[in-house]
Image (cartoon, rainbow, N blue to C red; front, side, top):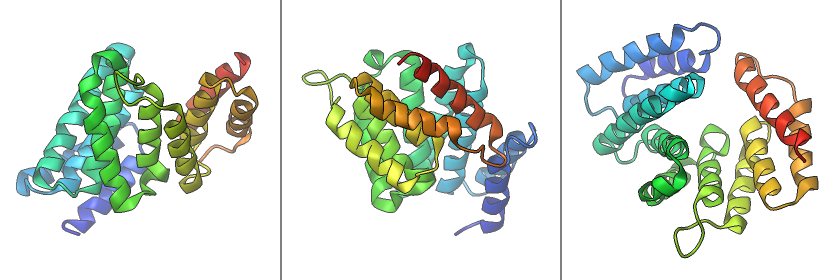
Length: 226
């Protein structure tokens, strides 16, 4: 890997984003300096895309589209300079999905095939990346996209993809949350309840307590609505 030392530093800063509010800014600065020196380092653009995803997750509602849009921009740059960049393809697909969700999926039909293609490419490279991330993206896409004849929405495929994500990331809260939402939509309340109760009973992951607490709040609201 090129620039391994910088990769390890930035990866640590992103992973420890909850320990210090400055960590994402520091990681961003390191990456911008790197791509200025090496403009064809695909993974650097991919991690910039990841930073903007997390920033969007924490942002106020009116700012989310901007941050996800910046994540898309950097992900596209990463894929442009290195079409086989794992990080660029994955975080591009994630930011596209979040951007489309914020806009409303019916306004974002043009994003569906690009998201699908990027996620499938990541599956070919490393299906377990980010706790089964590419399968999670695909599952969410099949769940949220309109069905035939408008688009690719398909509940059966969504379930298969989300279950595969869970196999690869059994302790990742979001895999359980997305499956619970899928089962609620499918009116399979007992299966949804199983995943929601898992989230509520699971211990918080070190350094990711704020993220996990948010998932627990979402799970509690969904469970109250069953």
